[in-house]
Amino acid sequence: MSATPLEKVHGKHLATKILPSHFSNSDYTFSVESLIARVQTESSSAGSIKHLAYTQFAGQPAYLIETSVKRHMFHAKTGERFEPLTENQVVELAYQHYLGDAELEKVILLEKSPAEASRATGSVWQVRFYDTWSTTLYFSPTSAELVSIRSDIWRLFDFVWMLHIMDYDEREDFNNPLLISFSISALLFTMTGFLLLFRSFVRRKRPAV
Image 1 (cartoon, rainbow, N blue to C red):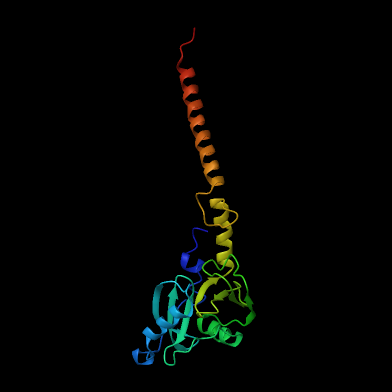
Image 2 (spheres, helix red, strand yellow):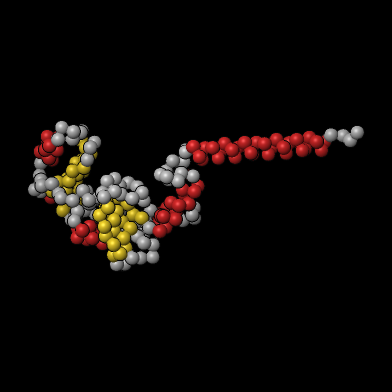
């Protein structure tokens, strides 16, 4: 698997992660300050503002206001809060991101994101195409962001990576106790092997009586 370029593993030849924006500053006219104040007054647990971005949502100019608690998406001209993506919207988005010409296999809203959609949390739209690699796109319902591109190439790589680091649950921790135990055991076996080799040379050099 090391011979496979990471670009292919990450699916960059299958879909584009970020769509080009055709909006200018004149499309972002609603007061950002008023939206921030709205977010902070709507809930006492809104948290501090972590990130503010001029972005787009399903083809519309949008403000992304991210707090330590959640993300908020507002229309950049009207200030209205965007509703979560509908199935029709996510299908249109998927075709805009997808670089192939295959037909859709399935579109489903998952209440809990699967393990392979590693960056996604909570609910997520799963869009799978009927192509050679079973290309699967995961979209955030609240931000319309393409959070993960997955394919059979990635799934095979992930399986081999799991075996390599011996993390059979999260497949992320390469300092897990199982791997550390096997590493220590391998080191001990190597040291004892060198010791036995050294002793065998010593025995051969002893003069005959």
